[in-house]
Every structure is written in C-alpha cells, then in structure tokens.
Figure (cartoon, rainbow, N blue to C red):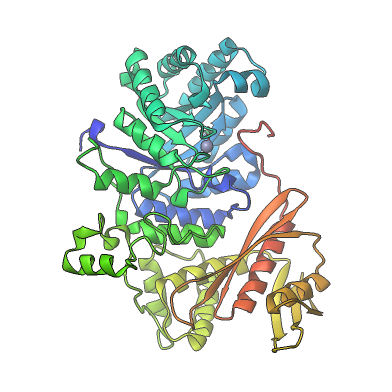
Length: 516
Ligand code: KIV
Ligand code: ZN
C-alpha cells in the first residue's frame, strides 16, 4: 500500500477514552488494552497525558515499554514542562510520538488561554521545536479547529510544519461540525497550506451531535490520512469517533474510499469486550459492529433471505470483525498449562508467577460452578485477578443473602478492611440493595450510586453476570466491576471495587481544562 493509500489509525482509548467520567484505568489495565490494540495492528496508540499525574506518567512509560509494533504516543500541552515529561515517559518506546496541542479558536484563545492569536502561533511553533528535540515523530493539534478561523488555522499549520510537525491534527473538539462542512475544511487546508505535502492530515472528532464517524469519514474523502478514534466510541462527553465503525466503513466501501487500513479486523470484537469489561462502559446491543445484535437477524423475512443468500441482508461477515460462536475453551478438568496457553492465545501474560497462581485458583473455583468456560469468562477473570492483586482497602470475605416472597431481603456481609475482618447486616428493597447497605454499614462511604447495570458475559442461565457500579463523591466519579455466576455476589464485588478506586487519591489533571 503506498503512503497515500494507507489510512493511519490512531487510537486514543487510553487518553481521550479515559477522560469519560468513571473510565479511569490502572496501569496494568492500560497495558492489557495497549497489547490488544497492538495485536489488532493499530498504527498509533495514544497512551495518556504524562504530566497529569505520576500514575499517568508511569502508565505511558509501561505502555511504551510493553508495545513493540505500534507507535506509542503521549499528549502534551504546548508547554516545555509537558513536552519534556512526555519525552521522558516515551524514551524506551520502540517508536515514539509526541502529540502537542494548543487551541486556535477565538473562543478558546480569548476565554481559556487569554492569549492573542500571535502569541498562540508563537507558542505552537516553540512547542513543536521542543518536541522535535525528543523525537522526529511530532504531531500538532489545533484544539477546537472546527470553530477556528480558516486564515489563522492555515498560518498556524504552515508554521508548525516548518517547525517540524509531521502530523497535523484537526480536532472537532466540541462535536459541532457537519460532515460536508468538515470535509471542505480539510480540503481547504490541504489546498491552501503551502507545505501541506510535508505532513499527514489527521482528524479527531467528538460525537456531541452523533456525527463523529460521519465527520471523520468525510474528512478521509477529502484527503485526511489519519483518523483518531476510540474502541466503542468511548471518550469525553458523548465520546470520540468509534474505531470499529471507521475501520469497517472504509473496508466495506472500498468502492468509495481510495485508502484502507492495515488493521486485523478480527480483533475488533475481543478488543471491544476487553475495553468494556475494564472500563465498565457496557456496549449497547444495537451498536454497529460490536453490539450483541449487530449481526442478529430477528425478522423471519431477514432470516429467510440470509439463509438463501447471505448478501441479501449482510454487508459484512460477522467473523471478519471477530464474532465467533462461543467456543468452549476450558473446563473443570483443564490444567494449569492449558489455562496459561489459552490466555497466551488471548494475548494475556502475567507479570508474576503469583498472579498466574491467583488467576488459576479463581479459574478452578469458577469451573466448579460453571462447566463451560469461554474466552469472555477468562477475560473477566483476568480483570478480577489484576484488581485483587492491587492493594485493596476492602475485600469481600463472605456474603449471605435471604430473599423470600413476601419477606424483606436481608444481607450479611463480612469484609476484610485493611487486614481486619468486619461484619454487618442490613435489609433492603431487594437482595442487591440489602448487600450494598450491609457494605455501607461497615464502610460508610458518603457516595451516591449513579449507575448500576448487569450484563451476562456469555449466554445461558449459568453465565457469569458482569456488574458495573458507578459511584460519585464530591464530584469524583468511579466505575467498579465485578463478575460472578451469582449476580448478588458480582454486585457486591463491583461495589467494593468502586469503593477501592475511590480510596486512591484522584490527583489526575485534565489536559484541556488547564488544571495541571
Ligand atoms: O478533542 C480535542 O481537541 C483533543 C485534543 C487534545 C486533540 O482531545
Ligand atoms: Zn478529544
């Protein structure tokens, strides 16, 4: 594929995706997702915003060290301190990129930055030159480009390309643009900026009007050759353009697009599940490509048509995006080696023998309760093991729930709180409510429950339920996850997981709100 035929996929699940309230991920979780993205052959992985906190720095560093086949990118505002921190975090990467940005729209320059356009231009150039001291691979973003003045945008872009930026990213930061207009913007920029041939034009669209994918595709039709996107469309507010939709639209409509990606699309569904499991953001059933119903044909007419000739109603093959029939991979009699090998096939390797032992013990326990263990069960089990290995304040020791027709449900819980066992009992409107109240009687948190959801990991009544709990305290939002064949136990695990996350200091800054 020649340069101009290739569409570069820049995944920002670990950075913009993590800016979704409650979607924060641990370092280990980020490395797992990054490895899955690498396996999918994503070109660039934006691993985080290193200056935001020591934790963010370490996560970017860990991803940079773990990933070999994709470029690893770190975000930096147009400031020396941000750029040097990003350079430091990325120094062990096989291929590193620094992504620096500054806002160029009148509203952002005047009210957020309180800088004149000339000052912004000067700072942008200075930032790109600084980033070039760390790597040749520098991307510049004109934040809120979608509401910026064309002449000024052209001036800034020309200057940063001269300063050494090799990728120019045009974000629709607030999701305000409309496909035709956004496509024209890209076309105009490429035509008007005299040195535009020295850089790849990229787009980064938010979904506030539900147009992120449409805007990105319109930009591609008008010359953009990099798209920034996230798995499941995760991201700030209404999210970013969804990777799976972009990739499959371009691949399916090769009659329209003159470029293509080099992704292994069969990794899309496993990656979607991994991100959903780790972040606790469920995928809606009717979501394109990765929703449970995306390839389900309910109506008799459709089923008849598909059976006679698949193309009557299907424009893509489910297998091409990684949907496979649930395969029984392991069971009660599977040994440690089979367990380890299957996880390796899924791209999961443990950092220590201790972690493998813990996961295997959990697997045996699950296999006693559930005869058929699917890949999805293994993914959930690994997420849980990694969580359990963290230094947790609260651990579930025991839970007993009585639920009977005509009686008020009662739950008794025993927790290990920082090494000390404590028990509590409470009544509730239902068994889950009683379990949460019993936990609160031991560990009063002062939190508000914002979301509670249960999804079955696989099908069948013995499937594990995967529960997400979202808690809010003093403006801080965290998601907790838990999985178990007993959904009340899964709920208690999810609640405790959220409480444990709340006990970790927040300490993370937001790149676009100037609060570092
Ligand atoms: O939405 C946005 O403008 C961003 C930039 C930092 C690229 O996320
Ligand atoms: Zn963004």
